[in-house]
Image (tube, rainbow, N blue to C red; front, side):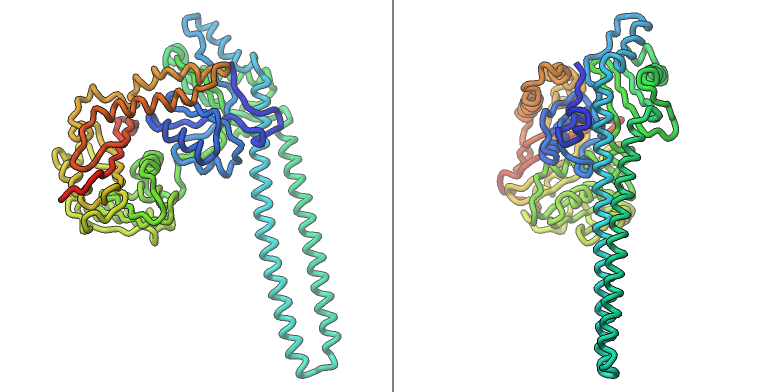
Length: 503
């Protein structure tokens, strides 16, 4: 019932099995992204995780934007039997290692190959850069010496032959030194790879176990207790050494009442941590998901009329650069924060900032192609009925056929759709965990058609929800997703302008 793709030593070339963690409600965005960006196959999901197979290298995997963390899959199976005694549960945990050690060794082999391939590409890239710098230096030396020859020819013609011979000899010596240096670097690189292989093959591989336990398992054992049991089983079976501070390998285990998942974190830093964002505002994964829903095309005019710290515009401009972006906000402090983020990301020339009110935009009617915005909510922002006046101004500046993507609180969403909260089933927690495709995702023997079941389920619930929504003015609802913001939930809603608003 466990899953790992690829034979030992095959690495990513044969296609490796991965999974990503995702914020609740972002699973459909991540499923679309891995298919489009990584050409992934066998794409499946369970609540908070998306599983897929891909041949992509680490450089491509790093580009995922809607995921929290990325893991190489070791095992995925049904939950441990929770109705038995604690002793039997401990034996079940140990069987995660003892029952199928081949899946562990296979995953370690793929993990090692991914790291070695990435190191090799980085070394080759550095070597190419160094070669280019050396060639430029050699050319400059040769040009300088040729100029010196021409000057000397006018003064002492009889010394020309000797000087040219000297230059020739020096150039040959330089090339000989360069060749020896390159051979030495290649030899050192081969030694580094051999050392890496030896280190991974030896039994002194160090590891650390990180656990998440919820449901019945979480009530019976703490994460530390589970980690200790798993760690002891690994040491006994493989002979690896535990190192809680600086391990070479980290093992991630998630046990709950729905599934048991074991994997290896591919990167130590979460994918959701953006190095180019100086001051965080809206979570980057949510911002990217909103931008991806807008279907941004080159040459478009994209507006965020309540840009805050500019996270949505930053994510959009990084992914779709050939676009005219404008961010507006009424707050000086927010605009200063946005400007700092733009400078840190090197995007100050890509995004224009305006200090204006969202209900008085200095733009002609029907001049904007796409509007993407996080509508503020909470005790600090009491918009109330103002949400409709905000939408009216957005509707005015948007051209016919244009798109609006909004992040709405449950209260704002209820005001706009005129629906009761209980009638909003889309991506809700209960319906998500009761997804009929989950068990098929968990069972390798029944995977055929699992991805279709997942996609069909999302689409069916999306259409069911949209049928209940009433259009607001000329804005027609297209898609809507309920997502988690941590302590609260919100809705990513997409609208299209069907006709001229006449405002």
